[in-house]
Image 1 (tube, helix red, strand yellow):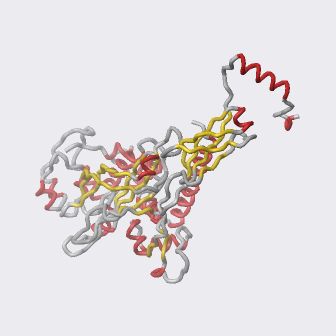
Image 2 (tube, rainbow over the protein chains, first blue to last red):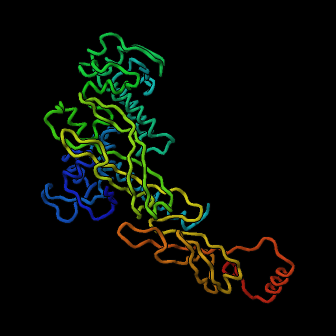
Image 3 (tube, each protein chain N blue to C red):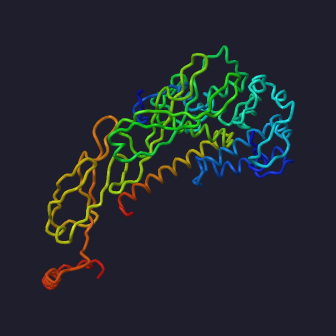
Length: 104
Length: 325
């Protein structure tokens, strides 16, 4: 059983990202328009887009926000994702600072 | 069958309007959704809210639920006669209602997909009149969290996860089954690592490939080391004279110990880098280990030590507070 680290240089096509996240292809396309996902390298035709495998995490989160929190507007999903990413990065910073403080 | 009061779960009266139900759900979802909430047991609470909403938001399912009458939560009860036909699916009736049938599973038979249905292709397809006999579809992806020790993350570890996973029945319903999933996590994971185990998700439909398992790794707190990415940090206490004069010290690493030089005139908080002694990285190489100097003063002094400190105090012109003058 090959277990994959999801921070490699693995790339995904649009339909693969849809399959692994539970988002529909048109939903991903609209989230790309709102700048939530950035296709790697060349843009152009959606069918030729590729995404970093790290995007699965964002896409799965977007799918949950959409279905479970009923955020129907892609812009609302985009805002929520941006805020959640900020929280993630702040939590990362807190963790890093704790390492440097080395207390407790 | 055990009764669950969905109205109570959502905190709405039994005659609540569809709009009130939606508002109550959204309020609770915001409070307990695992992406947004840090509340204890948020995930469990969110699931029960979601199950209740899934039934009450749908007029047809809600009417069927209301027909069950009122019972105390958790009370054993027998569904009224004719219940089976209301649910249309011959499957539900033919299988009978075992004790282990979850209320929500019954509502699944109304065919709109359950709380877990909407997030997978299989689930969506079912909602859109899924006909199992003619569609090849991949299985559902699972997601799991595992906490591992620093040592296990460094060495790699055999994990065995017990999960309650949704399983699709032949007539398109869903039930939760306990499943043990085993996998080997190779060295290289760190805190917050996401991994994918291809083929360890739900089984495919009609010869479709199985889904994948997404695994989120977190590291258990360690008594000695703190972790930042693949770098490790350890506190290294030295005596004031060791910091002033320099010394050789032994620093524990994850596997063994290394000798290092503390240079004369070292300061508290200074970091000594021990290259390659952090956590291994997935593609080879490893992070670094940092020993952070801490200057520790003895709390009890012998007569001799006291004399020497007093002599030092007299002889030294060092003013640690010069910048405050």
